[in-house]
Length: 172
Image (spheres, rainbow, N blue to C red):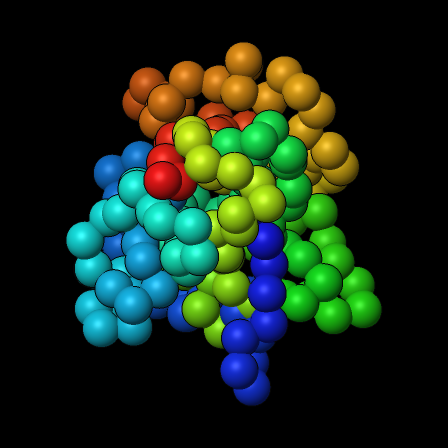
């Protein structure tokens, strides 16, 4: 996945919609850029992309969380998608505070999420790390990131101070 500038505003931080969060402590949904432009966060989820497609990720939280978004491309290359130098020029924090019950979509304003042919075809993963404090956000995820995760990780009865959600996507 490659971050690109798009038009006047490169894409980064999305619309902060004050919609209720999903039933999960933290949840991520992937959309096409065109789908988001026509239907907003309610556009159909998309997990299969062609090389050159643009993606938008919508993140919902149930409680206050500091959020970072990570990608492992089909070729295994990892990068922090958000926050980044385009979303936070001059001072990139390890994570950004998302208020309880909020949803934010990234990849349609200051920066874009681009399915780059250099990163290959195959299966990649988007991950959202949600922590109660900024200090708990990680500088780098390392090679064992997805080995320690399970899909749609959820706490029973209450949200934990350190939550993850991720899903796989395919680039054809």
